Image 1 (cartoon, rainbow over the protein chains, first blue to last red):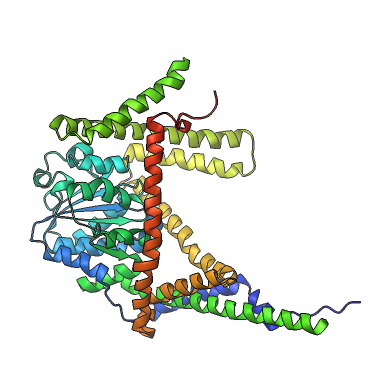
Image 2 (image 1 turned 60 degrees about the vertical axis):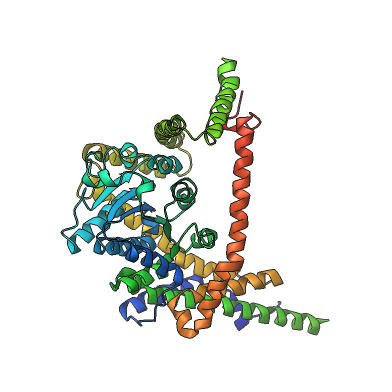
Amino acid sequence: MEKVQKPSFIERFLQLDRRIIYTLVALAVAIPLLFPMGLPIKVTPEVQSVYDMIEDLPEGSNILISADFDPASMPELYPMMKSVMRHIVRKHHKLAITVLWPNGPNLVAQCIEELKLEYPEWTNTVDYVFLGYQVGGAIVIISVGDSFSDTFPKDYYGASTAEMPIIKEFNRLGQADYMVMFEAGNSGDWWIVYGTEVHDVPVGGGVTAVVAPMYYPYLQAKQLNGIIGGLKGAAEYEKLTEVPALATAAMDSQSMVHALIFVAIVLANIFALMFVGQKRRQAREEM
Amino acid sequence: MQFIRKQFPVMLAFVMGMMMFIREFVPAKFSEQLYYGFTDWAIVIVGFSAVFAILSLLHHHMNKVRKRAQGYGYSIITILAFIQMITLSLIFSVRPGTPGGWEYQWLFVPMQATMFATLAFFIASAAFRAFRARTWEALALLIAGLIVMIGRVPIGEFISPHLSTFADWIMNNPSMAGFRGIILGVALAQIAIAVRIIFGIERTYMGGGD
């Protein structure tokens, strides 16, 4: 009877049970949330540019936000959107909000409700208008170049937009002094191509970490003035506004998971190399 | 009938395409009105396409249930969820505080968030098993990926400020150059497709069959 060779330590490591990896990931997420480490958050120039733009605009400037995401991207984009909106409210700018994704409007409504608890004087139809969702994607962007009230005859709450005080001064994309788009996909391309470039409106992007590389060419071409990228970008914005919240709290967890995956990849590659060496040695010995 | 199905759509695409193209070079008020008038039409047409999408979804799942195809139980759940959601939404809307809003906030948001949160586990496991430097190109990709992964989170800055500087350099140079190539390629392809549709060379948008 042929003797069954026991797998070596290297082989056993390379075939590590996935449940062990899952457990390590769960611990890497949970432990820093329970015991924060307070790792330093460095503000990058891309995030600083968005902050400076909103900060330096004269009080009462018109700002457009497009929240083009859904709950799948909420952990990354919601904290940054809330942080940017809080900054806009603090600076007393006028704000119009649109949504190009059908599952996004309720997230914006939730954000507005939370901010209204902090700033009860922030008034709907006067300081801000939430235009809600309109079907059409790129066509909606072209259409808001002509008129918000024609594209969105009613706001999210069902009120007629044409008669709103804010719409009398801020009724088309070209009247925006700045725009921030929160993107989980490629709707940001449409905003740049059909909207902000056509009407000469400066724009900053709040994007998920996955799509961030797609927006860097626009940043270098100055078609975007800044990028808030992923949860890290959101944490940087929270640091700038001096209101540490969800993103800041999640930074340690994200760092730990990244470090864990880093170590796992490096170790797997070292052990794979050792495994190849072991096989070669065995082959030489058998010859 | 053949004319309506074959020639008319091509003629319509040619006339509309050329009109919108020429309009770009006519700096007059009526040209702008035409442009925005057509975008209003387009919004209505896209709205109708959503209705077709819904009908197509229901048709697909009802067929599965009728034929008792594999996994038809999921189709029943899809149909029931669709019917109850659309009924509640039409009666009460989906704003916060309504039954539809409640379902959105306490069912849809957690379910979608859970789906994506599980990615962290799968990515960690897949990276451990599959991300191997088997060639020099793979090694370059691996090193770049590792630097960006660790350099773009606070722990990278904590280990060494040079890590984040190098990660930023990768994002702003090689990665950006690659994406610029993709964007330009896509834009050129879009122009080519538009020209093919306008001149009737590309007809797949009319659907297959006779």
